[in-house]
Image (spheres, rainbow, N blue to C red):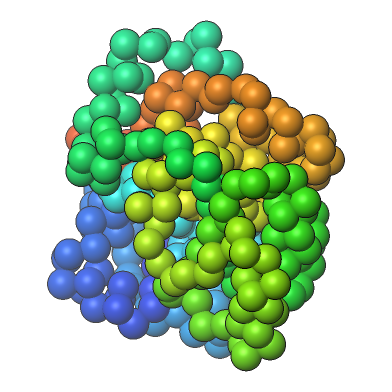
Length: 305
């Protein structure tokens, strides 16, 4: 029996208000795409209770960055830079479809990619990438739970810092605390102790763009700063799993020493990779093709649209 033509989109309070006002561009596209195919589309405040109830409700459910835990649910997530989005059957970035794909730089047109790269780095970061330099600095953007070794990580963030210290030589190390994270006192104490004990180490909150402008290398678990660093032509290595790993050596696959060597010695295909990863493997919400891409993506996940 066909599934009822109903789509419920579950959103946090701010996103819900924007969707109802019509100012959430991607959700507006989703609503138009499904509405044109006879679906009743509604917005629901995203709470644990509402999401649990979604499994028993008829039709389909679309969550914002939450686990699509039943067969008629999918998760949408911004593909790092507006207006690019993805719709996935998992909320874990390392399980996204693009994460499973193989990137071959030779299959991407260099001229098209370079033009796209130059346009987007100006749009996102203004003139800073044009003034990029390497000043003997290793940038370590940190995220949350600095003392925990989570399942997608090769080690805890604090242990990762230790590995950087062991290999940095005379270079400076900048530990960047994410401005959107609230760290526990013991986490802050741990990184402050590292900075106090090592004259090479500086701790700061925010300042990502300037750090990317002057650094030699980005070392992180899976911070988006590593991807943004490609716009500054800065290499990166990963201690965690993510969807943008294709041109960044991963400790989980190579070990620390080999991942470090590759990050130091091999130049990524910066422009071609960003063009492939973002432009060719995401839905750009402000294009005429967006609605058909949304529908085709949902169909590819088994939805009867």
